[in-house]
Length: 395
Image 1: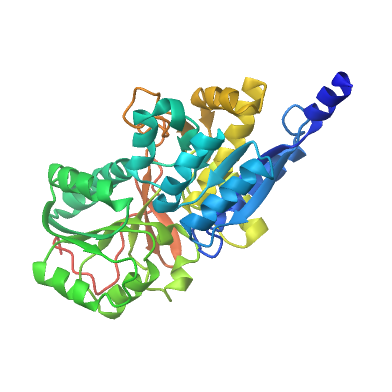
Image 2: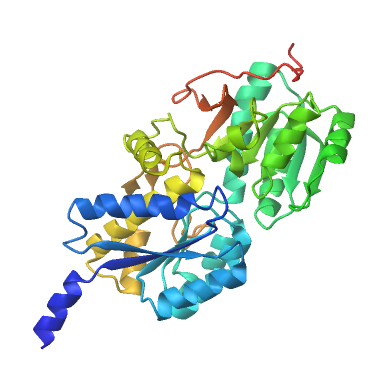
């Protein structure tokens, strides 16, 4: 009996719960990326003969719904790990439950520094949580590094206004912006935090124009289409560069009726960017299956299924604590770079490591309806190009 049970268990699928905001263009790429990875792994024989099974849940952009889905995943559906959300508030609501239910949890898109701070501060309880995306302050550092090269060095820009939505993830983002932008050569002349429910950006853009900055540095995720459309309609003569999560979606050009032209946004990869040898096969496979290129969270969700499978293989178990130990030892080249996690004594415990040879981030620009990498030079496919209403200081 015991032998039969263990043999059956060896053939049980490895179940990965995926909780996402499937009505959002950034969110739907999460289960889609995860399913594509699972199909590829299963087609190659699975993990020691065991198939990967993706169990999907829609959290309807609600932390309460996400928590209910997480509890169901762990207690009823008996998943072995969960990939969840691109919204920091949702991830922060899930985090205590990962500890209570001893369930490995990885986010493909939430950015708040608080996610890994909790793991660092209470490792024994929160060790089940992993951050599969860059933390907010690291995202700010990518933007500042790109700004120094593209704006200060190439275009002689000197001043900036920071425009961020009021959300958990932008608090550490803006704090780092206020330090690293001046260090990069851009004096911050105003700092605007706006409600994610804002629909009319005219007063905000009027205020920014009054400050006469050389550039608008953005921190936007839940908003994106609306400010971009109004930026063009109002012919705001100032370029936008920074974090714009919605701009990572290949539908953003059409969603904004072409207003995206000239928008610069941070990404971890892009449709034509060979960050690693796995990047282009993934984006092409994703587009063939789903009809569009993935958002940033599609890349990370895809990679996460692969390195969860790798951790199960290396650890020889789906036991939660053994899986955590194996995940901590991750050294996996994915679509966005080489993925390793910071240790329990690091500031960003269980976040992916940032830096050369690991995950560095890119700057892309919408040009002629396409997403074109413009920085860093080793992956750049084009140079900066702005619509005619933009007035550059170097002109």
